[in-house]
Image 1 (cartoon, rainbow, N blue to C red):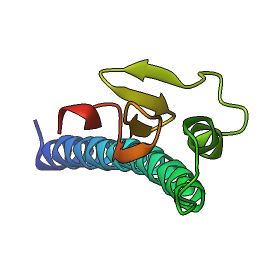
Image 2: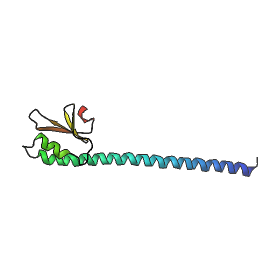
Image 3: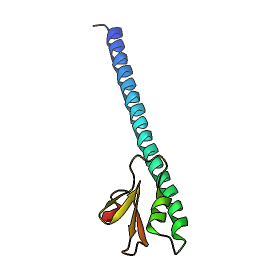
Image 4: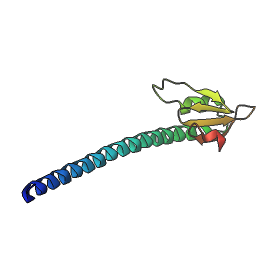
Length: 114
């Protein structure tokens, strides 16, 4: 094999390896951006719910239904549900005492274990 043929083969290999590396980096950046956007949307939803709940619980006479209604998300396909002592509305878990008064709120579906 001549020197020029070896050089061409090595340069072709380097070119393909470089393109594969760049393709991986672009794909990885796209996946990272997708996860970051999902996290941003979740935190934004949670912030909106929390601010709505704060307005409701600022009144001492706020009932359980008023707090849950304040936390509701428009067009949410899954309504509020109870699990492990919390009423889950979207990403926000609300806990009430026996009299139906608000006790605390936790974030995320795994927040009840904290």
